[in-house]
Length: 150
Length: 168
Image (cartoon, rainbow over all chains, first blue to last red; front, side, top):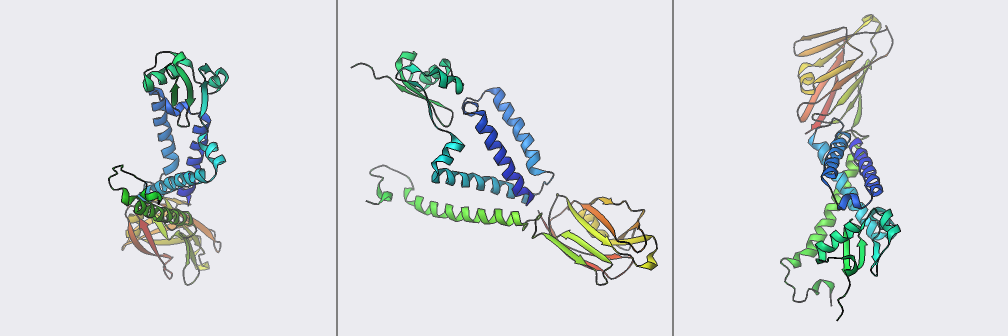
């Protein structure tokens, strides 16, 4: 029973912490973020295993973690509010060529991030070539370029 | 038109297997839910289904133990000793040495005043208050998986027999 409760507790805490940390932390992972993730996984591993090195414990933990993940995905599909609660919503940070600075500040997105996404996805060179920039639920920035004048 | 037929001329290797796959996936989800429930109840150790009690025929020895334990994970034996008036201030608890080795005794509380091994048995002697119940806890860490049988006795009295399943 302990293994199931430990897995549920760790899943819940990680879900809340990573949701609170915001989308940016997952999408644009830096070297330091990567190291931080490794440290977190080490810390969590100890809490999950709790000195029980048996294969049975490992299987119970894996099945519980994957099971709760499936359950959350089913609940997200069933209830839209739950989906938004867990994964958030896309956020428009540039609309009709205009930067929405309040939102950008809250979402910790700057012009350089938008330009970087524009270069990577469409090979755009300047902000005035962008119609919409959207901070997606997965943390990536998607770009809708302005249509060139015909 | 059925949704499943709406692939048009799109070439999808093995697309016809998708429905079958989803069906199997749902069955797997059900099995996983059952396994998690069974684990929470203690079918794989550490829960209400795993906890067991046993008593010797004369009632001088009670034992709370895990019916299902896991290899390389801590488990306990909690004995309640009720030594008779003839035992004085010493209670002698006997375990099969094979069991003690397989379960690797990590600690005993209270500490025994004496430990003696002879004829395939290990005897722990505890200082107790005469005619008073005493609880003794053994911390164990099973070293191998399998079914273990053991019989314990207090001062050569009738044995208390248990069977434990140690999962890998």
